[in-house]
Length: 468
Ligand code: GDP
Image (cartoon, rainbow, N blue to C red; front, side, top):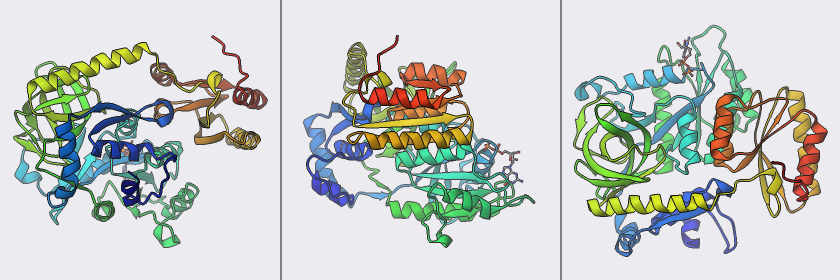
């Protein structure tokens, strides 16, 4: 395992904590399906593949090199509302040179793949905003390889821009910035660059390593250049897959269609999915009855990097579920049943999330801080830093902070990174409250900085009395 970490440029010792995403990858390469636990970002093995499959997985590693072919990058578009995400996704969709030969009418299936004039392909997740990204991440799936951050040149960096940056960073996904709306008279791309620099996104011309492309999603100006840069980054990432193995993918969208029954979009990550394949996805399983592309055209197979709408699930799977092809109906069904049973047992055992009242023995605390005004935010941040210095063996990370109400997106980020949410003179909105309840995320609201710091300090000393 150390050698495998080294291959990834990580020099680890035996008792070192490693990144959960990396742990997950390595576990999978060894034939264990794992999941990032919302609690503590710990990685947990959820399933051990049968011995022969494990061997295949491990043996394949070497013999596979020759089977590996380039796969299209999967890109998510993020940014503040009204900065042009939807427009950009529409404009990009129109650049698909294969559109004519494909025919059919554009359907929303949660993702689409385009072909550029040089023959290369790119897959875009087309649920605007970071909703899709955060729900998938909160469930332990990292599907996007690259994030395109859209920032309107006439508006600059806004709260959701910062959120998007933090989401991408915490998932370890490289960011390409699209400075949008440069056709507008008030556009000031330089200002956007200056503002982004505060978040460690430094353009190449200033000696940084963030690609920033000024574009107009509306007129299409420079959109091609943006796409070329996406390909450039994906080349560096060396995205490869083996099309000659049973398919593995992730559910990116699902619904119950009144006519067609349970329908889900699967993003194929490795292998090729064929009509007639048996599969398991989360607690459900099925047989691929029919598959459709983003133009509603029926297809017989789907290769790595391709999103495809699949019919034939027994029940509606959840976005973020792993989709794995199995050799027989029996295996697929048994696996789904076992998982369901295990899940129910775990529910019984009641999972514990981080709460201010049970901080004892915690080495690291992640905090999401929301406040009404910048001044308070700064004062609180400073006080928390001072407090952190008092406690040598505990690290306090403010993983995200911002002005305004606590949103659902804050809660999803908290769930994905096992963080507490602290609100100063702000409250959670209705959807955030609901999400916090579902995800068991602790939200604390304060109106006086002293109280906030006092509670934190008591909590760190393990002295905060639980209130019911
Ligand atoms: P989203 O909320 O980020 O998905 O933003 P939209 O794509 O819905 O865009 C918001 C508004 O900005 C719409 O009225 C678009 O027509 C407009 N818009 C988007 N991109 C551009 C652009 O490059 N130039 C101009 N002038 N307007 C744009």
